[in-house]
Structure formats: C-alpha cells, structure tokens
Length: 199
Image 1 (tube, rainbow, N blue to C red):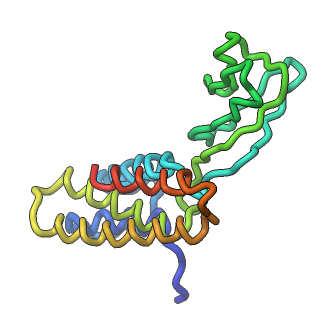
Image 2 (cartoon, one colour; image 1 turned 30 degrees about the horizontal axis):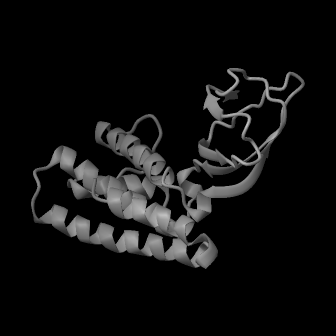
C-alpha cells in the first residue's frame, strides 16, 4: 500500500494511541466519545496554528470587490487580514459576521474595493505534511494531558513535538522566499510558533 500524507483519521488515531485506546476505522457518526474529543481538539489546534500566519496559508494583494450596494462579502475562512493603510487611510475595514465593515465611517458600504494581505483557514488536508504533523503532535500532547497524569510519556511526546516544529519552521524558511527586505515578516510567524508551541 502506498504511503499518503497524514489524514484527519491518522491524526485522531495518533491521539488515541497516546492514551492506549484502539484505533478507529472511520470518523463517521458511530465513533467513540474519546475519538470525538480528539477530533474537536485537533480542529482547535488546526485553527490556532494557522492563525499564526504561514507562507502556505497567507496571500498578498487579495481583491475584495463591492456589490451593487457597496458592500463586500467576507469569506468564512479568513482568519486575519491587513490592508495597506496608505491606500485605505480614510477607512478602517474589519469583519463583522459575513461582511466587511468600515469601522471608521460606521457603515457596511465602501466607496472602493479592498485589497488585503489575508491569512486563510485551510482544511487539515490542504496543509503541507510538516504542518499536519506538527499540529497532530501538539494536539496529542494536549489530549494526553486531559486523560492521563504527566509522566515520562509526555516528555517523550514533547521531544517529538520539538522535532515536528523544527521541520515546520524549516519548511516555512524554504518556501517563504524571504530576504533582507522582508526579514521581519519572515521571522514573525517563527517567533509566534516558538512562543506558542508548549502553551
């Protein structure tokens, strides 16, 4: 059987194995209570890690176009966005519900289209393998804490997590096309990752 990237089922089974539970064969309705907890925790960690902003889930100069009423729909998978204040200094766009809102002028109606740097929330299976594995091990450690007393097993899991985070940061450095002109942006997600990895 050919090897494939880590799936949600693989991740959940890794988490279950940390507390001595048997693997499951499906994530459908008839799953166990522990598996449901594991999947929810995996989802939480997937959102938290992606909110740091990585090369694989960040896009520059994303256009958001007004409709006939001047309103702009906000995609449901936008974690964060940043507009260039030089180009949009007469407004302060934020997301409220499913639309962009101009907090400066207190209206949903914009006078021009927006362009923003966007951090997206991607499905687990859209992530690179390094991110999937780092998230899996981060979620596994937290899952283990909920069910078991801390002992040498948790220390071993922490060591695995360190290796996984190093691989993720290496992937970020290799794919980000960073240089001396955007060094701060390159370092920012790495610093956040270092701060949050054992929270």
